[in-house]
Length: 555
Image (cartoon, rainbow, N blue to C red; front, side, top):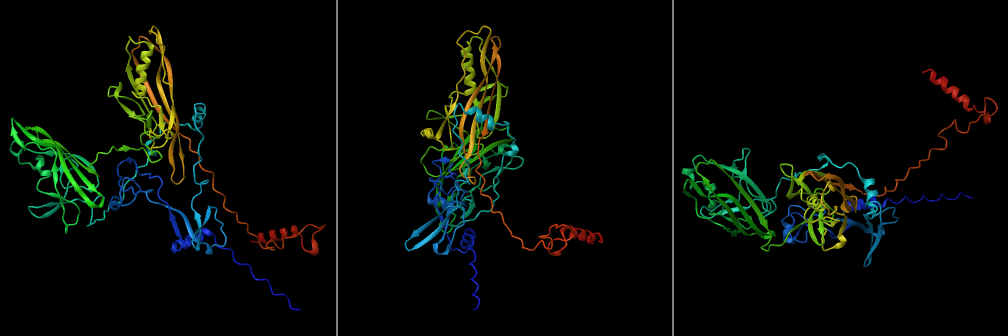
């Protein structure tokens, strides 16, 4: 009988699902599903529309149109990629998958997140008993060099002009009715030598401040004729255009807020000289400029003077209501270098260290703010009242080390609020006290305070959020002689990083390549069998080694 036909070849293995999804995504056949941004990380000021923060709830759709671009993290990102269910035979993806049914169509979706391998491990809770162990484990050198700080520069210098509405950074057009000419609103700035130049155009939505020097030779003869010293120069004779559309002009007058008399020359003084100019411009999304006003500061300059310094400010506001703006230290996680949020009850207070004045004495009015991840140390000298008891001396020291309002909790995240107790972590702090006795020989006083703040990165590795886990205040005491009135106080703050990295991803499959069965012939299967020949009368392994050695020795 004829031999049976050979079996058909096995079907080729299906292509990896991720390669297939990438290919179809490039061809436009895969639908990338996007979810709204749950937390707007660039919304750092409450009740204010942040520039280029497209997810800011305080920004209307008209405001977003004006933005040049959206900041990273303010746009929805692809959460999962889908393809028709009929195109998938088998899935070998390590990422989670789900099947979505839409009417008569079914879609196979790969969720491009992995909560196990792409997230920092949540650290353990911090208590008074566990803080010393965590401090010893994660503590290290205190002071970080400035070379570790990153400086970001804006390399995008080109601005796209728009004829329908102003865009961020675009020059604001002015209109001179007497001559029917157009110009741009300028804000004087200083040249290399400090002299003022008036040819600096102001940018839309770009707040600016500058200070420069006006020089003159004979103020007696030029007091009333110098335009740069006259307030009318900065608002009279021109108007702002609501939009840059020169074919549909809508003028906006610049209203003065405080006007004194014109420049006058009396009693060897040039009176009512402009020393500061502040423009305040009200804008509304892509509608453009709604209102504009200007305010001035004036001084009287001696006729013997040869120069005067002037300050210029440009401020943009979004509405006439004076809403209270509260600056966040991050949203949600802390940003490096931002102030640490501290609270006393529900009231926001400052976490700060004592500061020394120019003479090295403790400054009672100004203090150094504690900034996130920036270790610091301060010191100063303080005078004690000889009539104070030991307790009164310690209380005066506590007032300098801790400040007027001692915080009892810190914000876990940069957007923490005193109204939400779950967003706060208690401070482990027991302010030192001394015996209420008259100082006769020595007083045991706490002269040094160390603040330790334990923090960690949480969330996705690609977008981690910094959070404070706990903090404690430590005090170091020493005996101080009662006749010693000058003491030295020291305070420091140290940030301890307790971040736990995620587990490593799964290992790549190791290739198991099989070699041909006879690749090692004629050595395969040779054995020593009694003499010089092995099985079947073939030379043994030892003979082959001798032959190879003789052959290679001839070369």
